[in-house]
Length: 86
Image 1: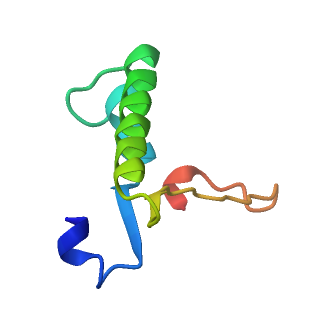
Image 2 (image 1 turned 180 degrees about the horizontal axis):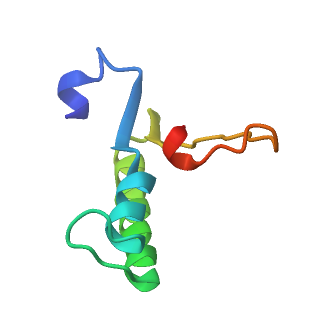
């Protein structure tokens, strides 16, 4: 892939928002298979980071990253909002 596309790509992404997928699949059980296991959550992160590191090593000299999503909430006492309203 690198050889075919490196002239067109400045930044490579190994995973897009794995934190959401791993959280919803292996910790909260919202996504199938509905697992709620801290151990499965940690193993999933270990696998993602290992795979990312392998790609990073293969693409030596290229910019390689992971896209993570973070929601920042600032709720004041006056707002008193629930997560469903955000």
